[in-house]
Image 1 (cartoon, one colour):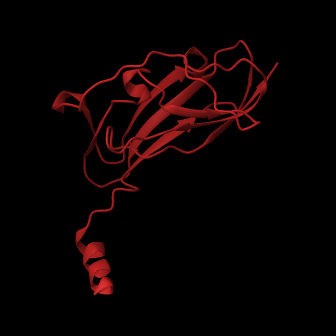
Image 2 (spheres, helix red, strand yellow):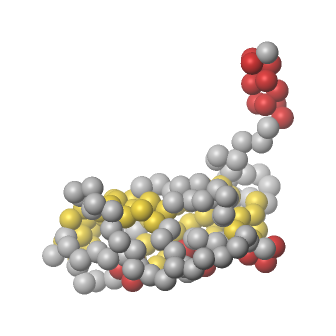
Amino acid sequence: MTTMLIILCSFFCKNNLNDISTILSKDSTVVYLEQPLMITFSVKNNYKKTQKFSQYMTPLEGFKGDILEVIDDKGNLIDYKGIQIKRGKATKKDYIKIQSNQSKTITFDLLEVYNISTSGIYTIQFKGRKSMNKLPDSNILSINIKD
């Protein structure tokens, strides 16, 4: 019976895991303290049809909550210092449509919203919230910050 359910699900169930991806990138992986730390965030539609997602809790709407996991080389989670907004469910106008093989991209200064004040190697990851924005977690970006 279990085998039959797995076969039916693989035939009828839509797997969204790879339909949309989130990507963090940076031109250079070495930056210096006190200089802007510009990060690019992209949402890419890998599916053959138009997809939609909510911009809630993504850099695309600006930082309105702690949406990244930033960790130093000692394993410490770096504090978010931006605003926090609590809201209800996304409405139709909060969703963005993205065509097949297209991306929505924004660049932001990580230092404006996360308290990075010492040199070291940091890892950064966007944390998707399937229940809110329908997006997966991003890749993990590693950055070396020097004095």
